Length: 226
Image (cartoon, rainbow, N blue to C red; front, side, top):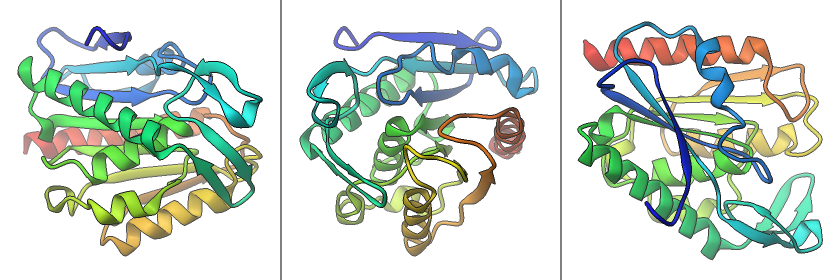
């Protein structure tokens, strides 16, 4: 993984579950690292949280400014995004490499969760719903699906019943609630049954949301070991 830097946090020695968590545009892997102890997760099984840093690239909608980004955003509108799909697919490749890295370290894909905020959540959606091997679940926060056709064209049978936690702020002025609801509607048309949460917040994460993520993850962990 020399091509991407990352941060790892393990909740116990010899973790048997992994969570790969992608940050939003312009942030980095440190963004969500502090919430790990706030999730209130059980002591077992041990979890390895992986927070990769997106590559640096020019972002067109920000005047070409170079920042950490999972893909270039060409234009913004309240209910749509025009993006560089090649970059989007490159980031999916990074996620697939991270999943394979965990398998090589003893954590198979069906014990790997993908999580992401905003742009990182879009990558989590694409990566999970098109992954050829079964995954444990997805946490999609304040995010959207910019290229639905990429998902519908490569929809994975292995993740036909993928558990999803989907959350959005009702006052989000960066990724509108409408964009989040569009993504929610799409995954429902694919036969999935996401757990949906809306919070009175802007483009951010709130304490109630962190608690709900922790409860959802704890429930999924119990089902993994049943």
